[in-house]
Structure formats: structure tokens, C-alpha cells
Length: 136
Image (tube, rainbow, N blue to C red; front, side, top):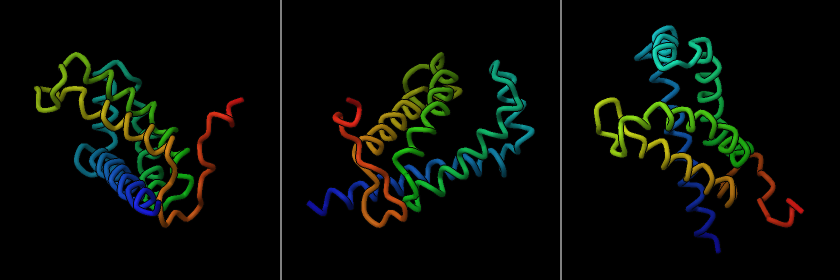
């Protein structure tokens, strides 16, 4: 069914746009040194702000373009897990002071959906589709 592929394309574009917006937020609004200082304040080594930015920026482009989008979405999950852990003490709702953990958790779920389901329509470099048989 072709509509399934267009649905995955929409997911891929939305997820890629989210990653790009967060990468640019770190670069343009908070600045990379400011992001590093925030990481330090959360007990995360500040130097990690730079590879996190790079992964988000390059990952966003790859996901939107459909260049091994499934694998890229999966490789970015640890960044989301880090965001989830930072926001965990703030509670569920993302509008809570300091931001809750619902949004990072939702994005983890969407990343797994993309990984499990495929790249969608108009992917430049298609990923192998996930099957349980491939694990055997």
C-alpha cells in the first residue's frame, strides 16, 4: 500500500525538521559554548555539546533526505535518552518549568517507529527493512 510509504515520508520529514531545529537552537540561540555550559550544569561533560550538535545537524539532513534514515534515527536515540534523563525530574508535561520528559520520550518512540517501519517514499539511499528474521 503506497499511502504507508507517504506516511513514513511525513514522519521522516517531521523527525528531521525536529532534529534540525534543535541543532540550530544550540548553534544560533544558545551558542555552542552556552550549550556546553548547560551540559556542565546538568552533570554532562560540556565538551559533548559539540558532537551532539554535529550529530543532530548531520542526522537531520540525512533523515530528511532519506539517506539511511532508519539507521540514523536509531543512532540519534542516545541523544534523546540524554534529553529524557535531563527532563525526568521536571515531570511529564513539557510545559513544566525546565520542560518535562513527554516530548523527548515521544521522539524516542517516533525514532523507533521509523527504524522499524522503513524510510518512506523518495528516500535517496534506502535502508534495509527491519525484520525479526534478520536477527536470527
